[in-house]
Image (cartoon, rainbow, N blue to C red; front, side, top):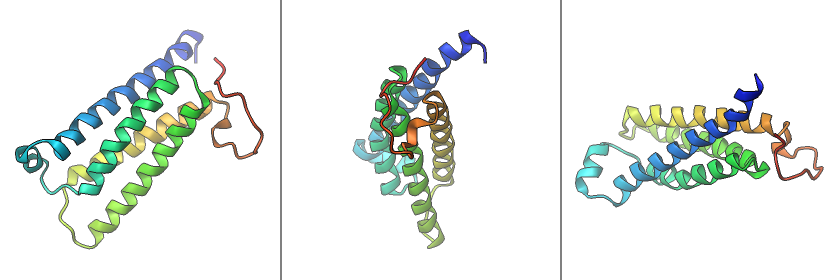
Length: 146
C-alpha cells in the first residue's frame, strides 16, 4: 500500500465505523423507543437482536474514536465487537431453528455487521502489528504506531 493511502486508511475505516454506529443507534432507537408504526415497519423483529444492535452502536462509535486516535484498545474493542456479533448471530440462528418468526433482513443485517466488524478488527489488528489479542502476555504501548 502506498504511503498516502496507508495514512488515509485509518480515517476511512473510522469514518465507516462511526457512520455505521450512528445509523445503528438511530435505527435501533426508532424500533425500541419509537411509536407503534416503527415497530410494525420492523416486522417480525427479535427484541434481543434490536437491543444488541442498539447497544452495540455505542461501542461502534467508541471504537471509531479510538481508531482515529490509533489506540490499541480500539483494535481490541473491534475484535470484541466482531466476536459479540458472531455470538448474537448464533443465538439468533438457534431461535430461527426453533421455528420463531423472523425477518430475513435480520439475517442479512447480522451478516453485514459480522463481516464489517471482522474486517475492521482485521485492519485494526494489522495496524497494531498483531498486538490486539495480547496473547503473549507482554505489555505493549497503548498507541498504534503510524
